[in-house]
Length: 318
Image (cartoon, rainbow, N blue to C red; front, side, top):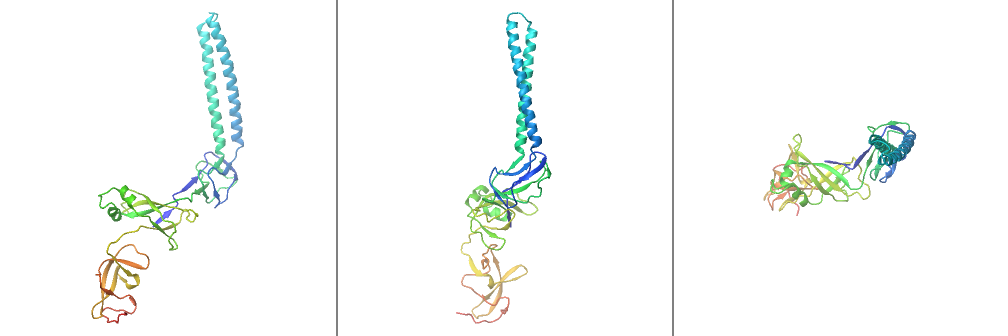
């Protein structure tokens, strides 16, 4: 079993304030950089204006300090003022310059906070549920919505330890080498239909969960028509090759105590029940027999579990 939607992006504000406008609707397709929400900008714009004024004042102080320092330098060089007096003007200039740098940094910060009032989409995708509307007070901890990127979809699913061991030939080759050699995988949707696009396993975790005996794997499926959505479930099917295997109809079997049985027909046309071992994977109509049947043996394919009984003599159809 698997669940896809690893492309979800949580949209949260980077500042605190009241939402003044919701620019999108739930389910809307948006592009990267598109504005999703606007947070109250009045105080933020005022902070920018104040910071700009502070920069202007600081620049004026730097200009004045520069003039004084240059004048004092000439006076000092003519021995009109002492070195201490000249150094004082130098210190005043350095202090004014530092205040200017601080004011400029505050302006950059104020402008950045103002830009945060426009909450934009970090990627293209589909807008999820919007619980907070105009007038809501939000902060960096508030979840505004979830943006689902329905391009290539990342499918997270589990692989058991036995499969991983067989994949690496019991450790004779690395997991990365095994992943590269894997064939394309298919997807069975929740309604039982097989998705038209095949996928590729991208990674398998090297850590086995002791509670489940499985590792997490991720497969990538193309989603050109946006059919796959975040949160859908289904099954990832990995093709397996069985050499010299027998294929029998599922209707030719019956189950008892979690075991599969067939009715084998002998030379006297008498049927006998026999347990068989089947592969875990199937196409929904047939089973791959791994053990319990030999080539050339005949089995009953009709009436199994209904009219056919053990030791019954039947008349095979030609």
